[in-house]
Amino acid sequence: MYSDKVMDHFTNPRNVGEIENASGVGTVGNARCGDIMRIYLDIDDNHVIRDVKFKTFGCGAAIATSSMATELIKGKTIEEALEITNKTVMEALDGLPPVKIHCSLLAEEAIHAALWDYATKNNIVIEGLEKPKNDIHEDER
Ligand code: FES
Image (tube, rainbow, N blue to C red):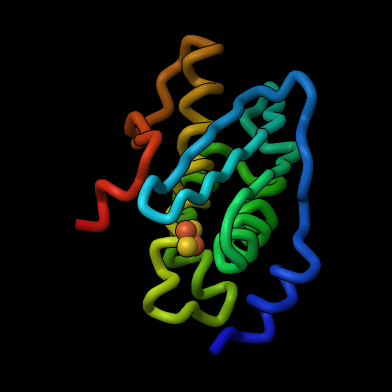
């Protein structure tokens, strides 16, 4: 049912934890399943994501997608990170079962929320970034 990569990132998730004094923090939940994800970003003056950590209170697919999403944006610029969608994350994981696709949206939305927090704190506008939702289950209808 799950690919080897999903199982690997679920059993051995990368970048779990917190960043103290993070440049941006984003928390997103899905009220329908009750899962919550928080992403911490450390961004340098050149807009490069130096470090990223996450905490996910959620299902295995949410943990695997958070882990893969953090791997994909680490070392990237903000602009590059914005191009990473839940589809990119799913492809990197060799797919998810259809009922678990919504879990990958948590990762994408939490990254956007953390970038939004960074932009707000620094009084800048990140082109192409829309105000994220706190609860993504509204999108599923
Ligand atoms: Fe809620 Fe997977 S079931 S994120």
